[in-house]
Length: 341
Image (cartoon, rainbow, N blue to C red; front, side, top):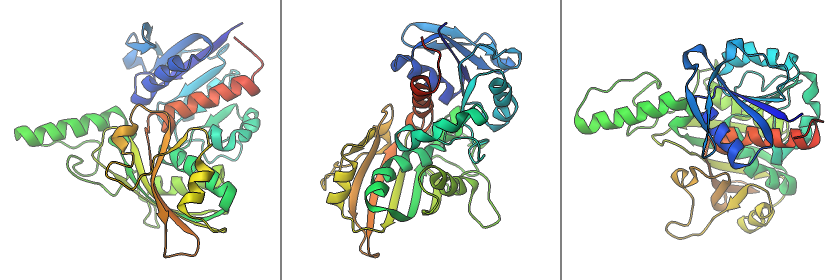
């Protein structure tokens, strides 16, 4: 019997990207099912260059016989339906934050900690990390292996697609309104996003940090090493797709940019493009549509004993979400699930 895959939230930005990624990577599924709310029943979504799937109602769907479900419909939907799918024998790969810090739910970036997938059976649920965390730990992993990172200070510059299709629509509509002198409307973001930067993503916590910043700290520690100290400042910027991060690290062992390049050179999914020339770096716009995480602007931090500074960009809809989920599914199929196509 072949592999059956469901995509929950198939009409959203990440859900559509999941379908695209499954097709691009020729995931060996005999059947792919698109699921969403009752409002989307019958909507057609693309799967590959030619196939079109009609969206089915998530509330009515029986996950029995479904091998893998990729969830990208928000935390409330995951909280309700992911355990139901898991109880039916389906392995859930969830893109929301709902299960990430559960002790018995693996939080995985396959290139970094694929071994954690061995614990998936405790809940039949695997968590995808925050998009900013995913790209950062990709860059940190080879450096931590060789130099032992003690502390990370990161400032993020996160695109509006991190807030889904409504966020992208708001940036487009506000930008257009500025040029045609229409009134600006604001629904998704706390302040105007067009021609602006907003130092606020997710809700505020009692200590003054936002939940997005907290996620980067605790998720990095869970994925990479609980001993690493992490402090983050997360900013929404008027870019449609692609997150950027300015990352400052302190290490136990001496480090410089040459040593860092050598450590990163053969790490899968990580590309260093770092030339001290005009255009010798990668921007968020250039990362859009690409699978890799890109590192640029590496230099020694002279303010600490063993310090390095670098710039990191990635397509947040791909490695930050859809691609990472599909890669988890690929590892599961290869190493943990007995059913083969």
